[in-house]
Length: 318
Ligand code: TXA
Ligand code: MG
Image (tube, rainbow, N blue to C red; front, side, top):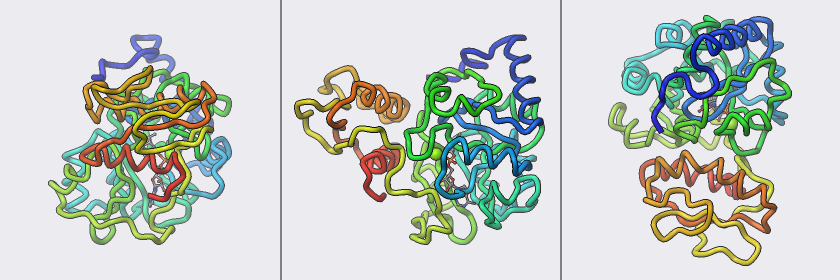
């Protein structure tokens, strides 16, 4: 699904006015549902600790888990984080887009302590969605935006799902249509050796082509917080690598042989499967099944990130 301009609800002069209103709500310490190319985020002024506290509260996060600072461009990012040559090369290659860099923090006020969960590092990303970009420009500074789901639930990839999850806590909600990517950004730390903290929309191979081999995330929870065992989870249990559904199960199939209303990609295309994953998990869950059975997904390319989210939805540590 290509980005076709401002995306569904926010085109033209009316869209401009709604974006200006949302920026004003952010300046007043309010929260805003913000579409991005990956998933919908719940945005707040990164410098305002009270606004950031509202984000944690709205998500019901059990502990303070650091948030991603979203920026309009590399120039803004360089004011809040220290970029070395590797970080610059990655930003130049993948921004704006679904890559988050964890770097030494350069300005601990622009992204407040609570947003960084007290760490001396900061996660930054410049999103590619035109509505997110317009909001960041109108606001004029970094915005924290975790995925707009309540803690532990699948990330919302449509406007309606975002409103259902945390809309009550938001002073404004921007409709950017369905998210083109549908999986969260890849998180790479560049503190010592480059480390993959979260597989995501940019594949391991694409990152390694720029910075060389990636080390794994450390088991140390301080370094890779937010890697909870059960995460992205629907209400129903999830059964992976299923050859076929059992009676009472909802069925997420994959590929040309796949059946039922939720074939993640009839052509076996992993980008299409990623874009459909969370919306189909939610749709299947709404039917109240005994379990959600999911067909095997190849581990190559984007499949690494899809299987990471599926293992977490099923409650296995990745
Ligand atoms: O695609 C995305 O990244 C979406 C959209 C809305 O931009 N946002 C998102 O945010 O997924 P969130 O808060 O759900 O996930 C942020 C991840 C968490 O796993 C968190 O632990 C990690 O980034 N993170 C943030 N700051 C970090 C830091 N300083 N060190 C290590 N990990 C960090
Ligand atoms: Mg999340």
